[in-house]
Each structure stands twice: as structure tokens, then as C-alpha cells.
Image 1 (tube, helix red, strand yellow):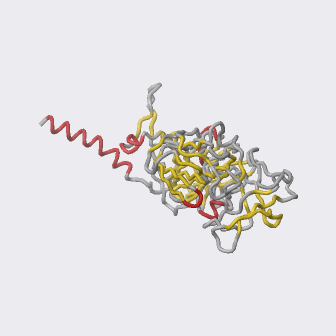
Image 2 (cartoon, helix red, strand yellow):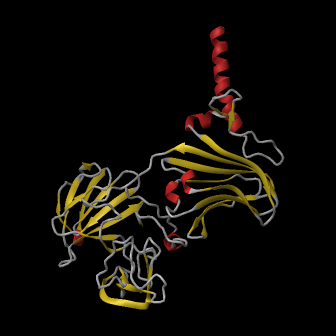
Image 3 (spheres, rainbow, N blue to C red):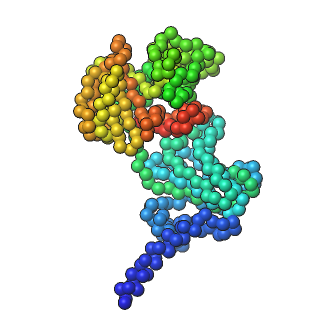
Length: 380
């Protein structure tokens, strides 16, 4: 009998907190208890309210009770980017106690506020999103979480932090990292779906070339019928001058860095003589695609893939498992005879992404054109 009683008590202790968690979202006027309650005992640890939070090892790092007027923006948490160190997943949750508050995440870059995230759920519904340090521009000076009143509203706001695994890529050419290697062609952030030329080329730094300012004479057939990919010229009235920098390592196929290559280019071209050793950017399985450009692909097993083009030799067999930094191929000029280099494309779930992320002072055009957010992936 005593064993049955003890078993019943143990089940009650486990189930009761989980049931409390299921009561959310809260109704208007209901008192909200923070997910973690600090004991009055000095040095005591934060105690989780629910078994679900205990399993997640979730830590509440901020709580605010407040209100916001209709049409107004109320500040929830205003911090520098250092408040969000890498290696963690952050979850922002806004519980409406009355009315309809919406949740926003903004960052300030070069004096301009840019919206990063938003949750616009209806009245009485939880607004929430997650983010990591990779969502924040390295040049941002401030990061701001805000509540906006679609109607006059009261709310409880929570910010949680939990450990996460951060995926990163090693640069594939020895002796360089991604920020010191010579670049001859960039990932075009103005690339449309199907990478058809649209008269604009944009680098991850926000530098932009336009066909209206001039096109280079060098071109090659594109995937879009009847069109060509071209290097596009910078606005001559740009106060930063007529030359492209792209992290200080850019050298165009013309002279003087006047053109940004190419309109619709799907990855990065790095200077590499024939026979240069190419390294695995991360652990994964080798796939030999071959084709017109001697392509090798590494499937990293998490939705990411690295593609290497123009290779002269494969050093691993199809299906081989490799570790980050392992030699996988030798660079060459297959398909671009007379212009040896290494082309690298990164895909996430089949969609091309820029491993440099986005560092422009305005919204990434690739996001509006393709619905994809670019985050920094390269190791420094």
C-alpha cells in the first residue's frame, strides 16, 4: 500500500506542473506567474515552473509586465548585441492580458533601425518568435524588442535562453579564411528565383551595381533563355567612390573594381590556381555530381550542402564521409578554361544562401525576392 501511495505522489508531482503549462495563453486580467521563480534564499537557483521547461533546460533571462497604447510602440528590452552571445537560442514571448499587442525585434545599423522579426497574432493570442546571434548584424549597435498596440493592450513579456548547437563552415582553401581570401565574383543578393538577371547586383556588404550605370563587356550564357549574366557598374555619384570593396578582398574580372560580378551569380568565386587543395567546409557525405563543371557536393546532414565547381580532381569517392578540414578535391578550370578558380555555393534545404549573411544597412533584397534570410556561417 505504501508503495502505491508513493507512486501516486510521484506521478502527481510530475503531471501537475505540465498541466499548468497547458493553461496558456492567459485570459484578460489573469495574473501571470513568471516561468521561473527565484527563491528568497541567497544563492538559490531559478526553479522551473513546469516539467516541460525542465526538460528544455530553459532559462528565463528577462520579464516585464506592461501596457501599450493603440498604434504606439513600447520598448520591452533595449540592449547591445553582446547581450545575446552565440551558442544560445532566444525565445521571446508576449502574453496579451487585454487587447492585442504585437511583438517586434529591431536592430540599429549605421544609425538606421531595421526590423528583424515580427509576430502579429490576433487578440488574446500569444505572440512569439525565436532568434540567435546569427540573426543580428555584426555591425549593429543596438537590439530592441518592442510591443506595438494594434489596440490598447496589457501584456506580460518573457525572454528565454537555451543552449543550441551553432553550425559553422570552415573556409575551403588553406592559408585563408573567408575574410582574407581574394574574391572575383560574389553571391548576388538581388538574384531572383531561378537566378535570372534583373539589372541589379548586390553584395552581402550592401554594395550595389546597376545596369543603368553600365555593364561590362564580359558575359556568358545564363540559365534564363535569351539573357546573359554581366558585371554591373557602381553609381558614379556614390559618395564612397566608384570602386567595389567587398570586405577589402574583391577584384573584378575587369580593371579597377568598377564592376560587381555577376548578375544572378549563385555563389562565390575565389582565386585558386590549378591543383590547389580544396577542403571540406564541415562534416558530411561526399557526392560526385560531375557534369560540365566537375562538381563535388558535400551533404552535411542538417539541410546544408556545400557545392564545389571547376575541379581538376576528386580526392574522395562518392559516398565517403569526411570531417571538417579534410582534403576533398583539387581546384581547376573545368567549364571555364583559361580562368582557373574555385566556385563555392552553399544551399540550405535546396535553396541557395550566402554564407557571409547580410551586412547591408538596409533590408536584404534576397529575403524579399526569395523569402530566405541569410545568416553568417563562416568561421573567422
